[in-house]
Image (cartoon, rainbow, N blue to C red; front, top):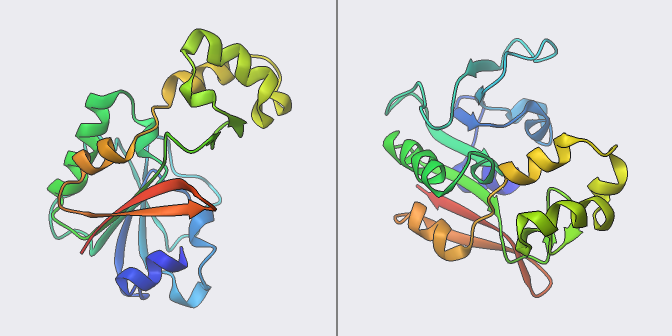
Length: 191
């Protein structure tokens, strides 16, 4: 969050659209430097959300905003949850349509630990093998009761490669976040 704040010079007057995010991330910034924030999500406004934060219920695939509505668009680990490659292309198209500087981050498909399950190589296995494997060989599999939610989550995640991410955001600077020798995630940054 601090890297984002520094990259775009985020100040209390900056109008930021956070696509698919929660207020938890923004609490990592000092309270006095929080921007004028709008959170867009599929669900209704959380009751515990601070009054000064705007909430918009809607889809990242059909943003209810236009160019000039925000100073910066932010999205952290959302694009891998919107559906198949076509839905991911739609997401990226909507971000680009706003013609606004943006910061879009996603986990790297080739990072050895799948970030949603915290299991090694879950993302590389065929779905029929990945589902039982994730139950016994991942932190999330150990922590939740066996139910369809775990399977549904696996079905709803499509991690991206560096090449795919660059295709989605062709005019952005694609930056890699590393953990040791491994690329953990990518961020598309456009000023």
